[in-house]
Every structure is written in C-alpha cells, then in structure tokens.
Length: 315
Image (cartoon, rainbow, N blue to C red; front, top):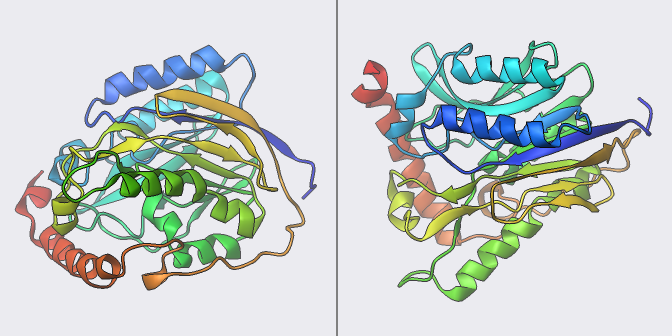
C-alpha cells in the first residue's frame, strides 16, 4: 500500500440517550448533513450509539438482531451520504447479547462486526473474536472502550496490520467531588481521558480515532456500580483524531459535536513498540486493590448473573 493514502474522517460525539434511538438517529443525521459539504470517507459514532450505553439490565430492552433498526438506519445513512459509517449496537444473537460495533459501506453493505471482549459482564457476553474490520478502503482496527485499555487487544490489533484504529467509548469518568472522590481524583480522570488515546498512535504509529459519548451515566449494576455512581460519574467526551505521528488533527470538548479531519496512512509501518503494561494487563495506572480483587470478583458475579438471568432469556 502507498504511504500517501489519505481519508477524510468524522467523529460524532453524541449525547448518551439510552433507548432514544429515533432522537439519536435524527440528531446524528443532522450533524452529518451540516458538515457534508466536504465529503467524508468514514464517519464513526461512540460505543453503543445510537441505542445508548447503560451497564444494567435496561439495555436488554433495546437489544436488536443484526438487521434491526440501528443497522437499517446505518445502511440508509451510508448510502444517502456516500460514506462508510461505524456505529455501536446492542446485538441479540441466538440467546446472547453482545456489545457490538459495525461498519457499513457507501452501498449499504455490512463490512463486518466486532464484539467487545472485556465487556460489562452482568449484561453482555464476552467475545474473543477479531478486532478489525476489512472495508473496501482500509483495514480498520476496532477496540471498544475497555478492550482498548488491555494489552491482549492491543497485541491483536498490532498483529493484523490495521491501517488505522477506532476507539469507540462511553467512558464514565469521575466528575463530582464527594466523600469518596477528591478534586485530585477528578483532575486525574480528566488527564487520563485526554492522554490515553495516544497509546495507539505512539506505539503502533497509525492514525487513532477516539470517539466518546457525552452526558449522564445510567446506574451501573454490580460491585463497581456501588463505587461508580451515576451522580458522581459522567461522560465527558474529548474525542480526538490523532495522526500516525502523534499530532492532534481535531479535538472535541465536553459537548455534543462533530469533529473532522484528514488522516494519512503510514505504510510501510514504522517499528512497532510495546506499551508499558500495568496490573492485570491494563495499559495505564489504576488501583491495585480494584484490579486484583474487586474487579475479578465482580466479573465472576457478573457472569453468573448473566447466565441465570430470566429477564435476559425471556425478553
């Protein structure tokens, strides 16, 4: 592949509206419509948008099969505006529910689907499949939220020589000071939100598209939900388009907006380096107690809850 290939890309930093699909359909198209004067090759939405992100059993009310409302909307928008469109959806496949991300091309054809591996275990089934999607234009790495923070997924994306990587997020960060959260905690959370996406551009030397949600977080089930409460955590956006040589092409704030820019492919790839790995395979600092004790226990309880939930099976 030639090293001078370029793509026009856009990221839709959307408000997290759980279950308000039609509203989000309209808002997303309006944002594209206003900015389509300069044609895009790719447009990407955040994790689980347009259905909205929630780490509780309410998401089962909005699960859909592969050709459900989100897929039908995405096909129509991709064909109407001549774009490749990436979006998240709550995938219902056989008896299971997955946190999934898909890309459809400008002809409305499904290019592929990636399912989240380090998922919200109480409500989604974990899936260890490929973390890239081949389109007619490029091979696109997809690392959905927590997946992108794990060395296993980083290595998977590195191994398959993707042209660029998309990090769809609904990343709840500490945003209010209370008895358990200090101002330093809030500042550190925002610093990580701003700096973490550079892990991929720094070590893989490929363009990195970090697309995050904004707005309120829904209550979270499980032990983590006792700590990450909806009144103290929220989605703060700060989506970014980062070039392969680590320059910020475009950056969003904390409101609903669209950002766009041109990315250049880096082929042949420069030497890939390995990022520093922290406790339990994470790619950034975190609480030892949380990662070594609470999260493994919570993950086990979550898997048991998911397997035996009558609500999931009956909906």
